[in-house]
Image 1 (cartoon, rainbow, N blue to C red):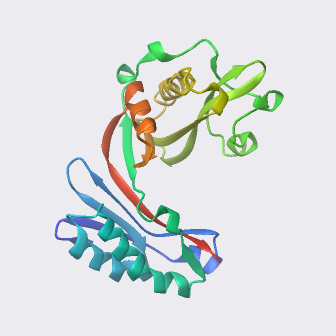
Image 2 (cartoon, one colour):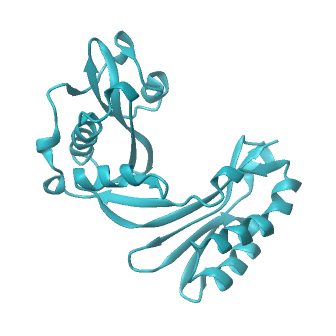
Image 3 (tube, one colour):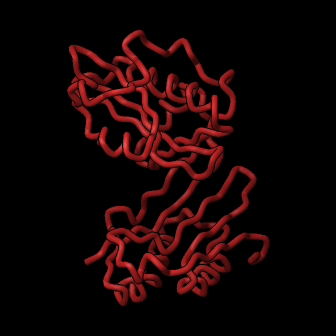
Length: 231
């Protein structure tokens, strides 16, 4: 469906019926080409259409986010969910890398490695190694004094050619270039089998955006998610 040149895609409401802990009844992104792409549930399609007509040109303004929360709140409450008010004004920078030649491989340190059997190594990050193994997600980590202190890992695969990554470094080990090293190493590895590696960070985290750009990622757009949780 297209409204004034913008695309809206609606999915069935199956998560609502199954009572997932987290729902995203509206999310959208605007690429560098200015095109707005909106994703919603079938039951929120009318609201998504209204949003497109009213806010297509200003969809990252605080007034737009206020409108979204006000208009979506009643239907979200009827499902037994509530919005995450802490994320009301938070949108994401969307960055990508598509070619190994764009990655600054000089950032890779000797203590970064692609881990195979991490259960034998202490973990000082909050990443769940068991979940990563279960989902067969790849990751690069810095091992110092016998412990993982920094990691970059796949978050999700959007399709067989696009994957998203995230990173974390234990506070004691920040400022040493570990995150940049692991992002560079992991991105190089992922581009062997993927066309695109994505990195997303919030508008409140300028350091994270600069980190991704330092490695070689380029911003391709912005996105917003209306997140709500089961009461």
